[in-house]
Image (cartoon, rainbow over the protein chains, first blue to last red):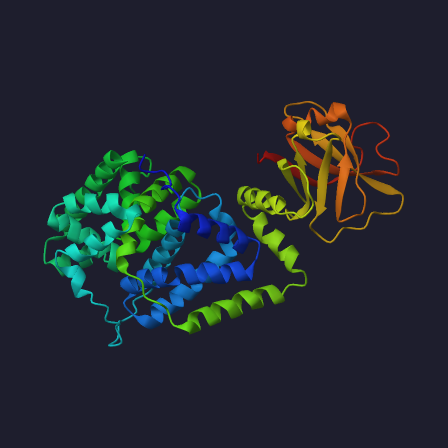
Length: 193
Length: 236
């Protein structure tokens, strides 16, 4: 089933164990948890926030939050990295939606352009990660516009109207791409399982 | 306002929330809704599981060392500020009792004392809702002499002179509470159970602690105020 926790690999098992230790306020274990995940999570925050200083601040807050709420992890139905990534994504998105913060010239360049085309590169990178292989295959089955709008929204936290502006398309069209794309993804992932 | 009851709408909003296109007040409202709607949280978690692997394509970028330095300082400081770190830990976990119990299971699992795995646990809270005692017990068929283990996780309150504290097991339904025995002032203790009670512990619904005259309740039922109570949860 699509909703189930993926088969726990060695990393997932290790992270789950470290989260339990973190809930017991084991600082050593938390340091290990940080070193295993910080680069992944910083990448996620940076994609959405596109500013190094913001991404650092959000990452910091997220780890404090993970430290304080590690005990909650046990009741989640998701894999540890999914749980932690969702915390970072949500906080980054919330940060982005603060009362208008004008982006200054300090924007951190991280080859955003790579995402604005049809982006086969990142999708291929996904295939390398076995957990994501099914998702990558399903992404490739989407229409280019659907895939592109989902990628832009997911990685950069663009709203529907920002997507429309970015892709130079009417709002309704973009909304439909995203919605149909997500529906097809769900269906495809359901069949893959 | 749109109804959040429609399954299609809930599914659509959850997906949009996870992908990040749900913005502004709609996003805030959706976050608030999740708090009281576990089913909605489940739908969101499913979308997170579906889409989060995409994050792997974000690529890894090592954050500068100062991020960890700040985090380390802050989690260290958070701990030093409390007189008893252990207490803060128990209190922190009291927020989500299910999580608490699961973590507790892990905690009991690593306890140095060799003993059979605990099968059930009750976190007994005081009237402020803070955990005071953690009572756990193994499957009674796994031990020769049935017992429950009691850990005091708060500063042990002082028993008034001439009083004792009696532990009660409440079976489910309308059955009367059954006395388990009197607790001592030790921070970590075991309470031996009579075989007749032991066989009923698996069905225990709640534990309660009452203040009784010296020697225990004279009537066989709680007579004094109940100071701690907690629901029993199977963990094995």
